[in-house]
Image (cartoon, rainbow, N blue to C red):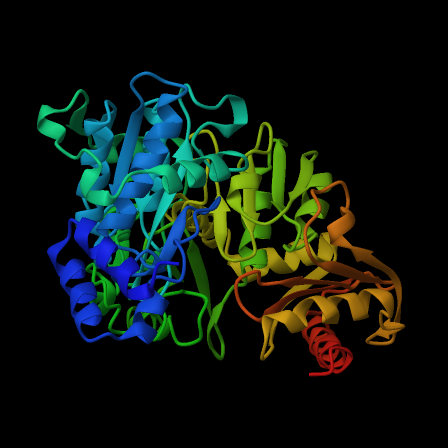
Amino acid sequence: MTSILETARQWAEHDPDPATRAEVESLVEAQDEETLRTLFAGPLSFGTAGLRGTIGPGESQMNRAVVIRTTAGLMDVLKKQVDVPRVVVGCDARHGSAAFHRDVADVVAAAGGHALVLPPQNPTPLTAFTVRELGADAGVMVTASHNPPQDNGYKVYLGGRVVEGDGQGVQIVPPFDSEIAAAIAAAPPADQVPRDAANGPGKVEEVDTRERYLSRIQERAGEGPRDLRITLTPMHGVGGDLALNALEAVGFTEVELVAEQAQPDPDFPTVTFPNPEEPGALDCAFAAAQETRSDIILALDPDADRCAVAIPTESGWRQLTGDETGALLGDYLARDGGVLANSVVSSRFLGRIAQARGAQWRTTLTGFKRIARTPNLTFGYEEAIGYCCDPEAVADKDGISAAVTVACLAAELKSAGKNLQDRLDELAAELGTHKTKPLTFRFDDITQIAPTLEQILQSPPESLAGSPVLRASDMSKGYQGLEPTPGLVLETEANDRVIIRPSGTEPKLKCYLEVVREGDVDWVGAEERLDRIAVELKRELGL
């Protein structure tokens, strides 16, 4: 059996990056086996979300060697279907992204492919758009979205001649993930993967689709009121310029960027965690919006595939939940019917809206790799502030087009003397008050998760917040026609719903609570009921 020191020596010998090679060599020289076991705990797992991990040396982290071998594996799979694969390559502004971006392009070209290279520091939605716009066979986006600053990742889309129909330009799904993972495992050491793009059989071509992307957004927005004062933050990410240009292109002239967060900065210095959903993440935006007396805050995450919305109230700024924004957008975009879709853990409010507007409603398991594959999709969303407002152009969540669409809706409402909260109240009066709340329970050990789920499934609570529990459904046996997945659903006589599912990678259970109140609009009562269910659920879980 190869020792950890020998494994590390062999890796360093084939690492093309002098910096990470030197780190490993130093650890080997110091015989720091404990640290080396962390760096070589097995290959970074490639799944439907691609790769994501901490930047650093070794097979278990994100580095140039891992990116090079991953791209070699991807090209091996693509070339079995297409002689000269056309691959879009994009990256954000995270640590390591520029180097990974170059390596992906070089490996694609050296393997006989055609690398269509976007400018560095571009949003994820632009990469997804370009795959469809140029009819590319695949797309690679180097990003870790809203992860901490020490992380980076590698996201894959398929299109062109590799997939058909609704899978065009969408993130990979099985069996492509396992095929690519197997090809990565079979790839040669990183320094033996050809990277001489200039003398290889393929080519590298620089492409810039930003103007086409903006034209598409402008075309979709059409004409309408544009009197709206907007505070916009890209959260130290790469979406600021493109989002600002998009808003201006459709006619918004009063857009103020949050100065402290306007430029890309991979360290995200003004936030603890670069996720607009996290407490405190919008503090800079709140302060800026208060000063400019804005009508709305639009906050992108660092790669601009998600968008948070906040509105002024008498007591300060309130951030809308993902389900609230999803309901507003679904209602706005379903004026002519169509197909609306959201993930099963998102609110059922979208279903009520679809029925009332003569549209169809579909639910999927979590992830836009599934939502975006909904046939004839008009609009799709998931509660984690991800929205797909133009599926024909971007078959993924797109924070920039969502920001523009929300702004157009808010401006229309303002011209009629209303705001987004007024519209939520109108929808609640028409279709019932729907209120949702996420809840996370952490455990000491991931092995505690399955027994806890099984216990609740076998002995579900008799009631929640005074309403009898009618059904306890095991999602691993399929739920409402969906693919089997770990988790369970509790439904009460009062139409409350609780979905409990394991994280999959961490020792925690994620819970999604929803209450529905018919009759008079009662947000406060709905919130109180959610809090009561949360307390009872915690007791049931023994936490």
